[in-house]
Structure formats: C-alpha cells, structure tokens
Length: 117
Image (cartoon, rainbow, N blue to C red; front, side, top):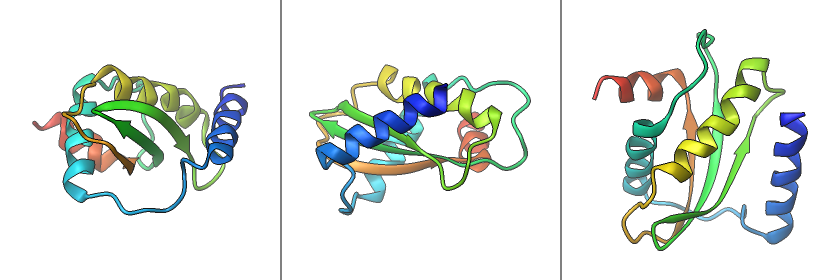
C-alpha cells in the first residue's frame, strides 16, 4: 500500500515535470543530507545494503516536493523507511534560501556518516 502511494506521488510529480534532469550543486546535496540526518529516524533492523533515492524540489529553503524512488523493487524495510525519509526532509526545513532541485540517496554509508557527527 505504501509503495502504491509512493508510485502515485511519483507519477504526479512526473506529470508536473518536476523530475526533469538538471544539475544540482553537491554543496546543496551535502547541506540537505546533513540537515535531514538530524531528523531521520529509520526503522530498526536495517539491512546491510539499501538505497532509497529522494528527489527534492526546494523553493526558498522549503521542500516544495519530495519524491521517493527505488532503482529496484523495494524491500519491506525500504517501504517502511521511505515515508520516514520524506518526513525527515520536510521536518528539517528550512534549508537556507535555496531554490533548487536535488537528488540524494539514503544509504547505510550516509546514515552511518550522519550518526558519527
């Protein structure tokens, strides 16, 4: 059910044209990743390998749209983690005065790096 809702959200965002390919600055991705990690609470028993991809459209520092995507069929754990990641991105606003589209991948490496800060 969560996957169906996320798929619907992705379809809506595609229809709106917000997931077109344009470059984002690595500094912005790093800033959003660091700030999002402060609010991220992921489910226990995380698998050794996972990748939850987020496309975020920032307007004046606020997440105007967040789309969660998967490169392959998500595991049950990823399905539970996906809305938590989207929630963390929106709860940790504002992101300065940035207006940009970014893509970031939430992986064990990112989560472990964030836990070490």
